[in-house]
Length: 363
Image (tube, helix red, strand yellow):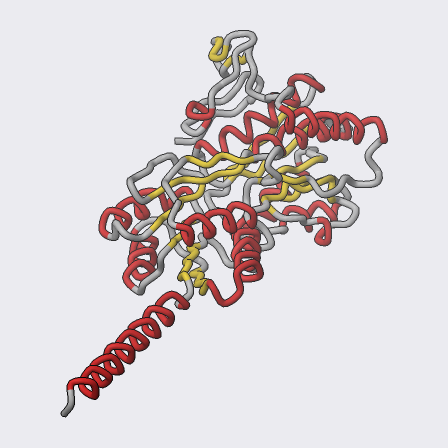
């Protein structure tokens, strides 16, 4: 074979190999980012898990075939959660969101086993080199709800259906009480713990028990619309949790404290795709559009709605902050001095009631 012919053959083979390599790289580059979501309840709870899943759907709408999302619903907190999170990491998911406080330790354990996977945990406080946290300041919405409840109640009895005595729930109860104490000191907060995130039967029973005691406004930190539906049947007001629950009680619906997770999920996916993601403690609220109150019941007096909107504006610009001293605990001890704002790293581990709450935190 002549040298020139051999040179052409080698050049052709080299070009072919390069084209094949580029083709392989192109296929690899086109592979979608795999994003997993772990939910504590069903996506049909019309509350917390439903709203997180709306965030997942917004990721799909934003990125199309650049992402592939997976979700697992009704995951029990504890060993089951660790198994589910592990399986997502093992099956090639690049980014995993775990969306309940009880998933914190299981997420941390799995994150240490899969250092190349990005993990984000909602509502917790533990972090790792590849695990961040994210939470929305729902206490802002509860503060507004507490103010509105303080103005529309006729019995001065406000009910609160609580899930578990974790910091997130305790601080939201406290924010409600702080609003009641400021705007209607005669109002009393009655709390029933149902020890569940999603149990429509228990939530309805709790709502009915409260109404039997004269409660005429019900707040909740549980995820089904059962309390709203019970309030509708008996002609009292209720506040929706996590998503807009107005359709479940058109007359009862006072307002809803809505979590908008879509922007956070989209921003996180963007950063992972760009290779810029780093674990951090993300705290977002009304200012960032993470907490929204879409509407108020038309029966609420105009001056009350105007004040509520004024509070929302203040929460957005920082001029209103519920946990500003002086704040006393249930025993009457000053915990937050006058003029001092309780830092978020203290709020995220809150384990005490503010003054004015008649009951004790269950152990």
